[in-house]
Length: 496
Ligand code: BES
Ligand code: MN
Ligand code: ZN
Image 1: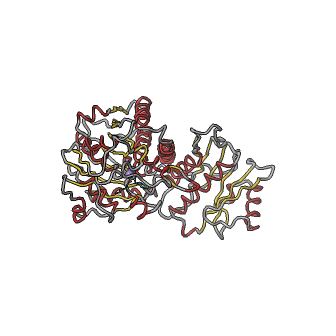
Image 2: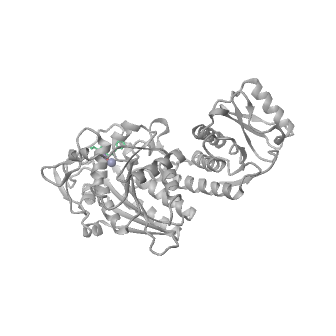
Image 3: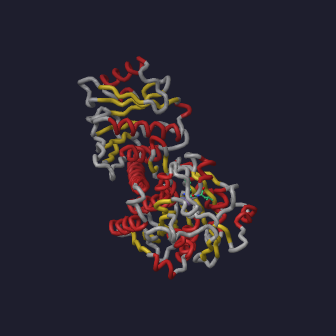
């Protein structure tokens, strides 16, 4: 996709599709003098006919009069002018992107980002639009024998106010493109089936990422190397599988300051989670191919920040394993020793995410990280609590939690914090080891984070449980690419 900026006093330009906003009650959003008279007349008569009411996200594709510079016009409802906030705009941008992806238009001229949004500016609106277009154009077809029809759209012109800062708007386009590329990377990896996307497949993709970006260096640790590091907890998860586990380390160096400490991202990469000996029920188990979406979001974020060339250092660590039952699998009651030296009683082999993450988190210590954020499809309880709307966040540092919350609100890739009170820690007591890997039926998302907190005492840490937000089920089954927008925004705001 090619994106261009148009800062002109007229929208009377050659394009395959002109996109205009329509307010509920007050009609067309653009000043009449910006449109060719024939186009203005056509739009106004369609609006008057009641075929589009201007409800937020409503769309209507109409043909333009023969004399117009565009063959078609996409009218998009904006809703109530006084209530036009960030969420209403996103609805509009999403509907626009979806409608455009279905037309045969190769080019489009979109007049939307200059509308007044109560709590956002035009640069934000531009980034969102570019992200939504990127998301709407994504097609999964890697494992289909008939390739999906590629959407026709290849070029989008974004009309901005004539006095808009071109630099700010072009930066906003670049940001949107980088985030949408990162989301596509995350979605594609997430959507791939478990028989293709194995731990070693993830490792190969990470090596490829390092080869394509000279600012990223990738290293892969094999099981043998992890044994040397005494990662007994991580290794216990892959014991039942013929697929070897991998620890993937990607170092992005964008800082010009020598020795600048990195921000650290840690991703859960369970390429398939059967539950192991504590086997999951069969219904819907296929969705456990998405159990590497934390890892996928980390790889997507690294792709995006490399494209943006952020002036900071970021180290990504992905713990990749397949959780299978077999005669070599870890059994309930088994006790393993983690890299930190702490012993763990594995009471439920389905609580495997924390087992791989704890060793990856201990490994993160060696980078002297400024902050560590782990991203994991960790608990069904997070789905029960927040559904598909919010990512659950838990942290040992209030400033970091507040920052991530704010970035979630900014990007609309929202997170909501749960408490990490000491009182929950005793639920993990074990009679046979330093800690148990489950905390019983109550407060599942919190006790999972409590477990991780035992391995994050040496740094500022936040945990993002994306079990509810990383993929959608039902008819729209597929990975969402969340929380790439949140992570990219967080990293964009950091200093070297
Ligand atoms: N990957 C699952 C979490 C999950 C479940 C994500 C359903 C999305 C939908 C994780 O490994 C798991 O199995 N967690 C268990 C933990 C329990 C055994 C303490 C869970 O949440 O049921
Ligand atoms: Mn599990
Ligand atoms: Zn899992």
